[in-house]
Image 1: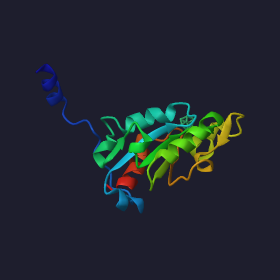
Image 2 (image 1 turned 60 degrees about the vertical axis):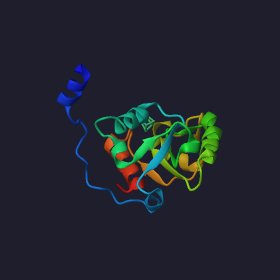
Image 3 (image 1 turned 135 degrees about the vertical axis):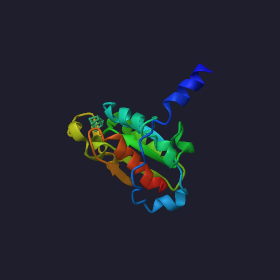
Length: 158
Ligand code: SF4
């Protein structure tokens, strides 16, 4: 009962919804909902913190129809962070292959886009687009949760 009262007192914490972004052509096939598997291909964990915020109570990406899932076999696409390290090159390819077709890849953060601060490092294979096809990129180091939410809204069209 105390918990219920606390929830009632707190009310809604989510930010007001910003205007709907222009959806990607793929949004029509997805029908307003997208299941995403996150892959950390070599991130410093900064991008993961922002993804956590994007799917948390304040930014609440789920209200736009996006959901993080545990298995690539249950996903419509991947959210990939970090430069792709040598050790993660093959696992990223295999995870991509495990996603049913048609599939979507969103590269989150500057490292995923162009290796960022890790460019030229001995353990780095390259940006995500060198390993798997990328449909959408979210710039920033790390990107703001609003930018991540905007990207997933382009997929859900909501
Ligand atoms: S983009 Fe920035 S926060 Fe994200 S993995 Fe690279 S260094 Fe870390």
